[in-house]
Length: 459
Ligand code: TYD
Ligand code: MG
Image (tube, protein in one colour):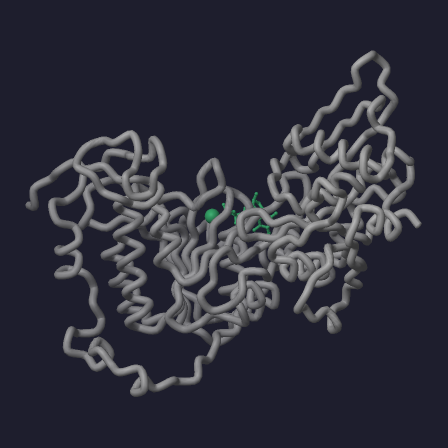
């Protein structure tokens, strides 16, 4: 039996240390170290004992000159689900590992099961560490008829046994639900710990690359919305997909956060129904359901959250100050930036707001820091001030400078694509260069100054 020792791992980057540290020297994050008991030498033993399907002197493991690499036409695996294919960049790439993250109960297992059951004629192995076969069968029955008659299910937690099942079944597609419930004997700590997740994911990755089998892996996410386990999990997989949704709506959005084989600006929209997920091919139907048609004081801004574009509703209420000093309050938006924008409106555009109370609210409880939301903020304020509603099919993106000019913003094409995808008819953006918008469904309008934007919105 190998000697046991206790080591500390950074939950953010997976950095290893023999003692507890307040701050990770590798990634600089505070308070991320957790203690784990591990086998003395997990790395080396896993290489020796690990399930290596290809032996060391195999052709594929020898270094090759770049001009001698033969390009085999990559045939993507059609998942028969248009929205899922789109997020993947056109289907599953053989040998790729896709990580699907999302909050508990959002529908990750349902999505994957539905996809697996609809792929025709592909042998698949669905490994569930969370549900029994009985539960899986009940869920499958709930989803209705299925086309794939070659779908094998197993409820197991041991990585070693999973590899035995793989050897017996020889699947063309492997599903792991979820990586946090799988454990290997090589690591002593409990399933879901940093070292377990890292080791199991690394072994599954090796299997995917060596056998050229695509793997869909479900991962839990933590309170702050990142995938649980070490950040390196996200680094080693080829594609990271986030499944997200609003508690109050049945809509679910599938979004690629990272994709080695496609763009990350695509989203897939689904609706959770009692018999599974339905693809929403016309997203504007989703917008219609919660749009306050004809109410003043709201504007839709196209923002970027991390690397993801997001359309968000900004609400403002402007009223005459009842008591001496006017109140300014902002929820989800920087109050100092709000004051600056109000000063710009007062000085550069000539609106008298100094005797008015201004309340600003970002819908959905989100906190935003993207300056491109400025244009939506001042538009909502003016809409409320003048009591004129903004056309709900218009969306806005632009940073406001101190002179009242609308300044260029980053990732403008991604914002336009998102607005287009969500069914908006017009988008108001700053002046741009070197961009072709001719083929777009959405009308792209440019504004150089705040006044120009107001002419478009309120003329
Ligand atoms: P699930 O896929 O188990 O979530 P996850 O794997 O992300 O934790 O989703 C479960 C939720 O979806 C549950 O609250 C019930 C709901 N649901 C439906 O509304 N319709 C269905 O057909 C299915 C299978 C689940
Ligand atoms: Mg699940």
